[in-house]
Image (tube, rainbow, N blue to C red; front, side, top):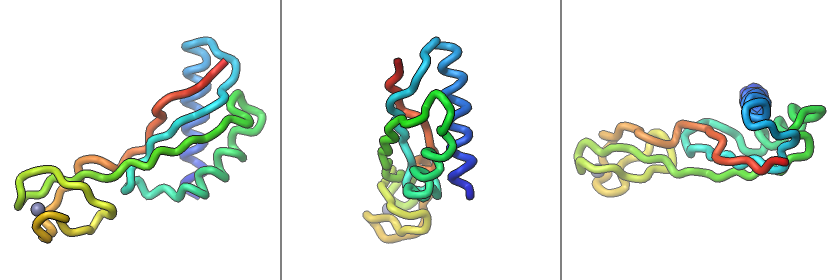
Length: 113
Ligand SMILES: [Zn+2]
């Protein structure tokens, strides 16, 4: 499951941050997930619970912020919002879009102690 390895990656980042900023425990993690990141939120939540067991993030609340995707429309010559990768431009209806944002998953912030 792809979400499981994403969660392992998140825990690794948390452990590195804990060392760098010397905190002992993570209470809350806020993740920003792009609409095109291909992440199943329920699977991610499940994976997070499993992977954080016995780590500094055990029991931490996982808050997920879903970010809309942005693409550059070659026909309108400006950025537009899209919901899915192969959506047409919401303004002009063409498919000449280049995705510029919305493929990432990143840790936005943490609550620690
Ligand atoms: Zn357009």
